[in-house]
Image: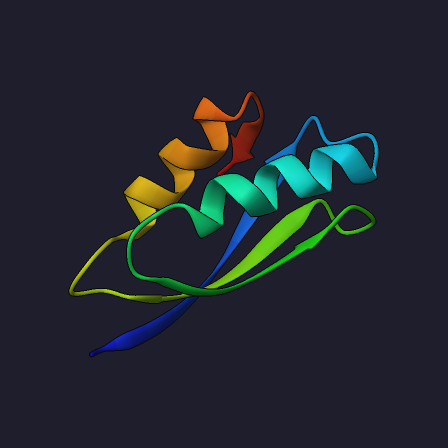
Length: 71
């Protein structure tokens, strides 16, 4: 296992329900070990195994949940 950490900016979260949706979407990606989503900071902190997934897949999961990723 090769654990990586990334921070992803997210636009469009307005409530704790949004935080739960993003958290759930990221937790469903294979290889994700830990997710912390901050409404105040508009970002997600994600620890993941880069043998199983990558940042592009994490960004896609957020977008599929209906939110915009900030570059």
